[in-house]
Length: 497
Ligand SMILES: Nc1ncnc2c1ncn2[C@@H]1O[C@H](COP(=O)(O)OP(=O)(O)OP(=O)(O)O)[C@@H](O)[C@H]1O
Ligand SMILES: [Mg+2]
Image (cartoon, rainbow, N blue to C red; front, side, top):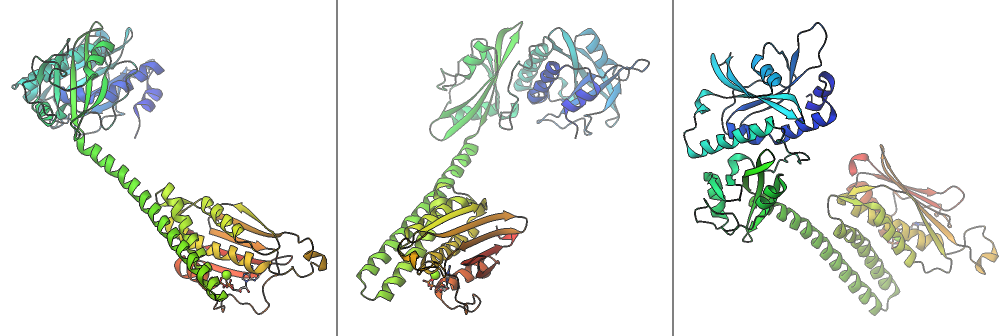
């Protein structure tokens, strides 16, 4: 789809400030379509080509929210001869509103049109074409009369370069529309008319007295938007909270005549449900955080209980088993700790790695110091991958601490015992098209020649195998590292995270 800016740049002579003015009009003209129950088109003269008939290009189109459209086809981007749209061309040339009727091919009869020159500074830069049905031409109800009255005043503002407002923020999805609730106030801010939906909004705010003749503040609605809009001669949007459970979005558009405010339109929309949903979502986030926090606390309690129990045992094997269990529980707690800070599907795995390495460093008991290093990163992974991967890496790091350096590395010679040189454990991580790869390399004593990861029945590596192969659908290999020591490599397929 072509944007108004692209159209304007390719086929018109509009300057940047003129284009910005028209874009502000397009951003705020839903109120015009609704107040006039009309389809609106915005047309701009195209760059003139010598010898060719001058044209207009349609750069914007909007349909009313409260009436069926008369223009079912999308006209944006279409060019028409000026002579074909004679009324629009006349409005452009004369700089005044030109009314008339055009034949509507689908309806088969003529429909009224109103062509409004859009002025910016001293020049007319575009024409806004209003197309409407004869049925809406004569207002019957009070609210229709008021809608038309305000529409007429806004038209004059467009002709006088007073609408759209300079620097106006273009309306968001949320800004109220006319049908949500419409109030007309005079230059003092006293209500002249309130539409039935506006009266409903007043009721929800606890205001039951007749609003006509009163300022909103006199009715008990603490909205400063009206005062601000009238004083600043600029639209103001404000969220008004009445009682804790009702929130109404108020947009006040001042009506000007020769830069002097003659009144204002207030559009109001009950956004209580929207805000309640926002708050629920926010509190859901907080709840998830809290749950992770509690899981982490519970895991820490379990790990403390295990270590208390271990201390009371006499059997060395029993002690070791409980300490191992305690350590495994702690490595799961690490993941929940990170999730409690940053809830969501994705976990920054780098932070978890940092904690795992610190845990491994703390568990070094051999006389030989061990230096850890981490290279690379896997970025963010889902919580489903983070927990098993964290537990698996904790096991492998722990194995390096426990088994690689428990006696001097072969070939280190007798002097190693007096001033033990440090052992090294390097964790390398990467995440790419082929998936995640994590390798742990140590320069320790290496694996026993008979060792085979596929056959080992010891608990630590059985856990790792189960997590990596069965849970994550990955693979693990263990073998001799180049230059001595052990190399463990975990690979996870790309769809694991
Ligand atoms: N980095 C390593 N260097 C040397 N040997 C290793 C290394 N990692 C593992 N091993 C050998 O593999 C064996 C199996 O390891 P595994 O983790 O399954 O059991 P464990 O560490 O002995 O006991 P636990 O169940 O407490 O982990 C170890 O006993 C050790 O002999
Ligand atoms: Mg182990």
